[in-house]
Image 1 (cartoon, rainbow, N blue to C red):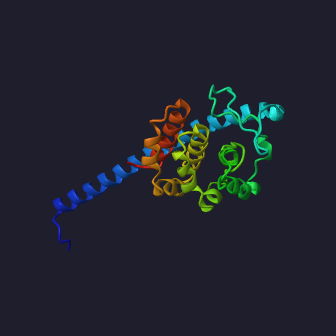
Image 2 (image 1 turned 60 degrees about the vertical axis):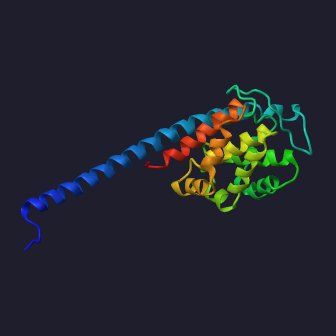
Length: 215
């Protein structure tokens, strides 16, 4: 015999049903946010890849430093910092990830920028499976976040923010790693950057992180 009367049992069941419905609504909202975010990212990735591909023929036209051609030419997105002119994206492969990480750790600023660009491009290739896990497992998330402190180099800040934005667009596990290293307050601080491009990238990143949070 039940320890509850019929009325108590019905009230208890109704309460459970409401909790279940609430969880289902939250899960549905989260799924919709993730889907919308991924569609936006795919559009942005296709634009960047298309723009980058069209500039490959001009690889040798930019200035170089230590064998790396880094410049701020305006691309089709009207972003000076987003330019990948001077880099052949077809040669940016997961097999070269160790080299890109080595460049990130270099004392040479141009190599740092080049390595960071290669990682964010690697994560932006819409027609491939981005190596989110490999990059997160390499331990470079805190290193990328440390580049936010380079206030005199907005290009490096921008590339690091974009790379982290792409990492946060992966699975919930990858996003959790970015958050665990204190990315949210660091992104919030970076939103005061005088660069419009950097500020826009911060908003993208925070949107990706929020898209994986039910709160």
